[in-house]
Amino acid sequence: MNSAADIWNEVLKMMRNDLTETAISTWFEDCCAIELQNNRFFIHQPSEFKKQTIESRFIGTIKSALGELFSSDIEVVILDDEELKAMTEAADDSEYLYVDDYTFDNFVVGNSNKFAHAAAVAVGEGREKHGYNPLFIYGESGLGKTHLLHAIRHSISRKFPHYKIVYVKGEEFLNEFIIALQKKRMDEFRDKYRVADLFLIDDIQFIAGKIETQEEFFNTFNSLYEHGKQIVFTSDRPPSEIHRLEDRLRTRFESGLLADIQPPDDALRVAIIRNKAEQLGVIIPEDVINYIAENLNSNVRQLEGAVKMIIAYRDIMDENITVESVKQRLKDMFKGSKDTLPTTDTIIEETARYYALTPDDLRSQSRIRNTALARQIAMYLIRKLTNLSLKETGAAFERDHTTVINSIDRVESRLKDPNDATEFSNVIRDITSNINNTKA
Ligand code: ADP
Ligand code: MG
Image (tube, rainbow, N blue to C red; front, side):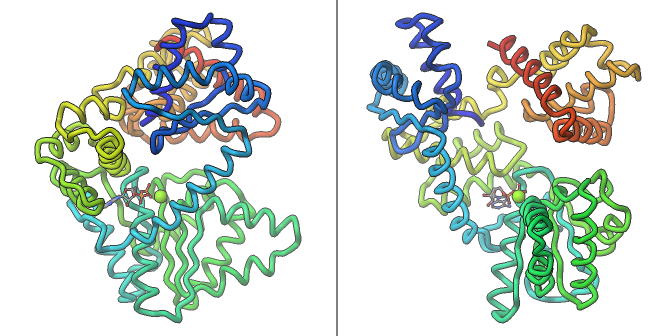
């Protein structure tokens, strides 16, 4: 979903009637649309000079374009780096409050998640530690892993108020570890984690590849485990597919209970939409519910976004919730709107072209270095720029999803390699911009 960007593209298109191409590129090229919220449209412009110029010369033009698009008066706010940061932090805070809603009561159970849900409930009741320790919940993004983790936290804190619960995201654990190492505060770091009665780690895949962190993590894990403390992980893939994960850690992760969450089926999607609308106190007509469920079918976060968006339009624009209005409003979120996303073919073509190869080369079995590299980049970009799953991405090359994971890994590690990152990220940027230009 990229609605702010789409709105902005429309605005730019309309402004081209009044302004020259040079003016557009000079003042707006590095603008980035952030969001449309409560009748205010937020745009980020990093340069203070350009921000001021836009505010003094162009804000009226932008406003009238928005007015035409939405038939409503919309205020335009240009944010500099600092303001953007403040706004994102405020949003993060509210997201944090929001995790209070991540309880078992608010979790809708269906075929695709009932096993993970049952395991989480058992852990949340403090039942049966042995078979369920550690509990490792995995599945693609937006399917409810973080929600279950917080639900366990709520449930345990209610039942065992004296328990010390430690919740950490994989990437935070990593950052804290690095800082502790630099500042020689390892003891503090250890104390923080080793006192836990319940240890929850969200998105553990982030610690892969960082050897020292894994060492420390292994020790923390053992110490908790030996003291009979419950540990729960989430990850976007099973332990067997987390690359550059030490074998002994992998073995530990697999030694408890592995529970996967699959994308929701029809019945669950309908139930979730109904549930989200109910929570927000709105009744959505049956045919609209079915329309959303049929058209947004991979991910719960998207469903939730759709419900919120149509309610927002209803509130801001006084719009009736009908299939027609929803179709219009959610166009960019729906799979029918492939035009806003590049196609696999375009990505493969453009990546091949960059390396003076053909799309068939990329789809072939060739292991010639340049071809293999181009193929990895194409896979990486397909995952980044489209909604295709790992499996579907692999299928475009007649390969399986493990090959895709490997390729993404290679590309990501080059993007992180200090000797390589600058040049390589330029390559990725160039190809991406070629793809986007083809699309337009
Ligand atoms: P993940 O951690 O797997 O990426 P999240 O737990 O963040 O996904 O879920 C994304 C959003 O979808 C959250 O707002 C969450 O509350 C909601 N969600 C996911 N699964 C369900 C479900 N089964 N019932 C209700 N809400 C759900
Ligand atoms: Mg999550």
